[in-house]
Each structure stands twice: as C-alpha cells, then as structure tokens.
Length: 406
Image (cartoon, rainbow, N blue to C red; front, side):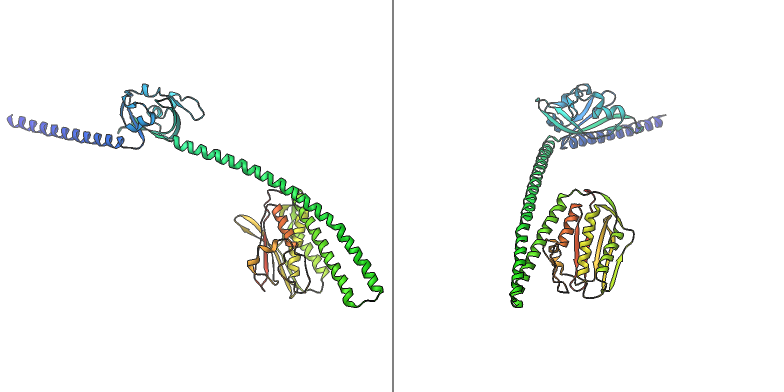
C-alpha cells in the first residue's frame, strides 16, 4: 500500500512538472509572438471567438488609425470605427475583413478601405484577414492586418492626373499638327499647280525657238541646247505631277476591298513582257494571295515596285518573285529581284521622293518617285515597307498592310 502511494505521488509530481514546463514554453511562445507582432511594420489585431475580445494588437495599428485601438476590448467597439468603400459608401459590418474571417471563415486579401482616423483626417488602408482554427478546424480567433497606403494612392492619383493631362496635350498637339499638315498640303498643292502654267509657257516658247533655229539651219550643238531645256522642263513637269500624286494619296479616303494580289501581279507582269518582248527571264508568282485594301492604291503600289525590279534587271535574264511570308503572326508580302542591288546602308533613303538607287544599267534615267509613292501608299494603309539588298546580288522589298484604316 505504501509503495503504491509513493508511485502515485511520483506520477503526480512528474505530471505537474510537465504541466509547468508546457506552461512556461507556452508563455515563452506567447511572449515571442507578442514581440514579433509589436515590431511588425504593419498594423495587426487578433480577436478571439466567440467572445469577440481583442486579445492582441500592436502600436502600428494605433499609428495608422491615430487612436488608442489597443484599449478597445471588444469587436463591437472596433467595428464602429468609420470605414468607407473607395466609391464613398459606408462599409456594412458584414463587409469588414475581420468579421468576414470570423463569421464566414474567409481569407480576405488586399481589400482597400477609406478610414476616418482619430484626428478626423482620412486615409486609405489595405487590409487582410484570416481565420485561426484549432485542430478540429473550428474557428477560434481571427487576425487582421492593416497597411497604410495613403501616400501610394496619392502618388498614383497624381500620376494618373499627369498621364491624363499629357494624353490631352498629345491629343491637342496631334490635332494641331494635323491641321497644320492639311494647311501645308493645301499650300503645296496650290503652289505645284501654279507651277504648271509657267512650265507650259516655257515649253511653248522653246517650241517656237526650235522652229526658228530649224529655219536658220543652225548647227546640231545649238539645237541640242533647246532639247536639253525641253528635257529639264519635262522633268520638272513630271516632278510637279509626282508631288500632286503624293498629296492625293493622303487626301484620298481609301476603300476596303478584297484584292486578288496574285492575279494583279500577273496582269502587271504580262504588261511589262508585252512592252519588252525581247527581254528574257521569268516572273515567279505565289498563287492565291488575297488581301483587303484599296484596290487602285494597291495596283499603283505593285506597279511601282515591280517597275523598279523590272528596270534594275535589264543587264541579264530577269528573275522577279512575288510571295508572302508570316512574321509575328502577320502576313508580309515581298518582291524579290536578281538586279543590281544596292548598299544596305542606303536602305532607308531609297523611299525618299526624287531619290534613286543608282543609274539604270541601260543608262535610262528615272525620277526617283516610284518607291516614294509606294511608301506613301503603305503608310496610308498603316503598314510598313522596308528593303534588303546587296550590291550585284539583287534586292528584296517587304511590305505589310495594317488594315486598320482600310
């Protein structure tokens, strides 16, 4: 009997020691948790269930709210603090993050609230909340964090206002530029039109002068002067006409139409071959290519680009290709030739009006306007045009049709 009593006493002592040890460890953990929470840079509050008693919080929460929240003992006081949605509506109690975590077991992430602080000022917080459950999955408490994002929101609002102001300024400046361009285009159009009359007058007088020189039987060199002057006048008339054409491209409203590109290229190629039957070579045309754009503009585009390839392949049997590749999911059309090519460092200059790649192999002169017209047509369609070449090895011209305008 005495031995049993001693054994029971020993078990009781061991149990009591284990209990005290567990209690000490729990207090240490609670103390550690309190220290961690107190030093967090965000506001923290923990409420137990079902009493609603606030059991833990930190100074950061009081700093955010500018009032002594930690003296608030129960949720019914805490939930009466003023909170508003970003659109100005007052928060219902059931909408509060901490209540949602307690009542519904919800995890609330980055909800934004406007709060009325203790000093009467307002701020914006980002709040998070989550339920705390026991081993059985029952909610026994809930934790909520508050982060003051007032400064960030003010910065975002300032940036938005600046962005809106900048966009408005860009819109107004773009409108001004468009008006200026239209006015400038009208002036250039009028000036180029006015140039026709004096050019025709000069051409007429050259004709009279040529007739008189013919009657006087002057030498060939003297007569060549009038021929040169007439050639210059003709060139100027062509350049004025080209300016008119370029301006018309931007002044004209394009129509969206389905275009059978392969057939159109074949027609243009046949016309070239009929006009120069002595030339040998081949056109290689990818079949069944179709696009949506302005039909007359695209015909002018293809005619100018194919004409360019035709002129620069006269020194040998020509090989001119028309086809399509796909780049970044967008169709890219190309015209490739085996002509004299060009130095790639001049690739961007060849699309300027009255600029040429170089002398034609036959000695024929051009006006350097065809590729400029092609470039203008492509830009009108909100597409891109670029070239790749190598001297003596031909050139390839690529173009896309944006489709937004058409």
